[in-house]
Image (tube, rainbow, N blue to C red):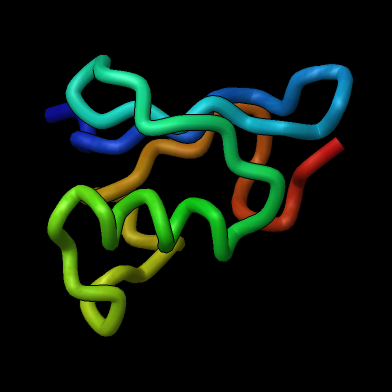
Length: 67
């Protein structure tokens, strides 16, 4: 099963597109932006684990890759 959230590979500017069920949530420039997008989508920030493969699929590197 594919996780509902996908953080796409970094662009040339370092921004990473974030999608939920293929719908764009925006472009993140750091891990905190990903958490904020998920909070706006209705998730409790206390429940968000950026390394949870059941929640987030990181493409092109994990939460420590931004360029």
